[in-house]
Amino acid sequence: MSSSLSPNANDEENVRRNRILSSKLYFEVPSSMVPVIYSSLYDISFLGIEKLHPFDSKKWGRVCQFLIAAGVLRKDQIIEPLEAKKNDLLVVHPESYLNSLKNSSNVARIIEVPPVALFPHCVVKEKVQRPFRNQVGGSILAGKVAKERGWAINVGGGFHHCSAEQGGGFCVYADISLCIHYAFVQLNISRVMIIDLDAHQGNGHETDFAHDRRVYILDMFNPGIYPFDYEARRCIDQKVEVVSGTTTSEYLKKLDEALEVAATSYDPELIVYNAGTDILDGDPLGLLKISAEGIAKRDEKVFRFARARNIPIVMLTSGGYMKSSAKVIADSIKNLSTQRLIDTESSPDRM
Image (cartoon, one colour):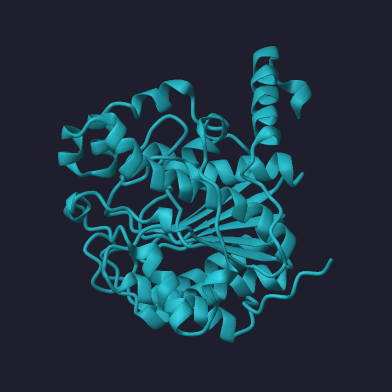
């Protein structure tokens, strides 16, 4: 309770609350739009240097292209978010961290592309940080849209290695933590469940919510790969380890068991689902052996879990280091629509 906070903590909470309430990132979305959030500004193009990282930096746009081609939605139905500005980011990140991003070497370390260190900050800010800030705006808006419509998919975001004070693993801003703090204030909710099914441990949000009982974390990850953050592992409410080489049937069985435990352990008002596709068989970083059909079934299980309990769900696309990831994500979203777990038919606006 706030009454148990120190005067300084109370002051910090008030500043945070005021920043959230003055933000422009929450805006009214017409009912003619489908709860799929994306902007062409998500995609990173930086003189080809982005190809030095295994991540497909145009994955997000390709997901939407596949969805449009498949007739799942139209381009004019997609919600375009606003870019998260400094005041928005200060809700979670201290000024010292944001200042550290003015150093190109630091950004290069975080996104794991060393040549970025050679470019002036103004170029890095525009070509690298701005796309990430647009995706952050999408993750934050997704919380509002999910509460209103039952679900929202940000075709981006899921930067789960970034905490308030430290970035890493291609994650510059803590969009998951930001999404949740905005939801606490703007949506007046106090119980959130993070279901993190990216192959990597979500050490960023685990660090941020280590002592916050308003957030329950289910993290299913490969313990033999990055980030090896054993301190953050102690903050996971439900830790499910899937070792390298885990197959689809094993994986889905473990997921079923984990969701059963989660159902009896916590009663959330919002689910933030980090749906990384780096569990895909052949992914060079995830090292798991989950089929494309298995990923669609995984996403279906999580959405059924939310739907059965009438809990709004935000889906973020997170990691995935193969060119095939974009098609896998699009096919999974198409399956969610086919299974009627999401409704991609927009309704006409009413006056």
